[in-house]
Each structure stands twice: as structure tokens, then as C-alpha cells.
Image 1 (cartoon, rainbow, N blue to C red):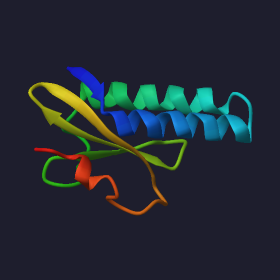
Image 2: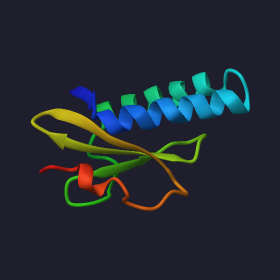
Image 3: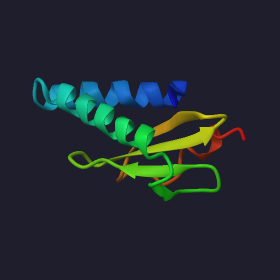
Image 4: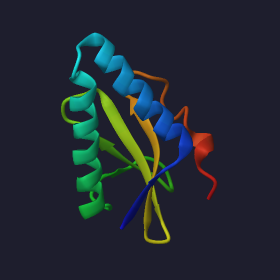
Length: 98
């Protein structure tokens, strides 16, 4: 499947990478690599993760306290949000247009 980030999710990813690099140089790269691994698993098994809402699913990252919220439509995976687990739940819900 094709994987596509919506703009706010890209900004969240970029912010998280910068944050972790400020904490420890190179940690942002490790975070990014885990995001890539998580998205690869989502791509292989898109329906395996828990339904988060009517149109979204949630994949929990292993090493970092983040969830990858995504939606499947027209044989594409849309990354809706890179959400910190301690952030307000479903703050991203208005990003879903279908």
C-alpha cells in the first residue's frame, strides 16, 4: 500500500525528532527509525491494530510513548497523527474528513 502523511502528522514527527535530539544527540534518529519500523508493520498488516474510531486505527510504538494514528482509504494508508500518549486523547479527531 501507499503510505501518506497528512501535514499535521509530519509536523508532529518533526517536532518529536527535534525534541529527542535536544534531550540526547542521536536520539531523534532512533525515534525516526522506530517510526519507520512501525509504519512498515502497519503497511504489512494494516488491519491488525486496534480500532481507535470509526475510521482510524492506533499502533503503539515500542520504545517511545507515542501512537501512530492512521486511516485506510482507497488502498492508501494515511498517517493522521504521531500522538504522544500523555497528550489529550483524540485532539486530532477533526483531521478526519471522511
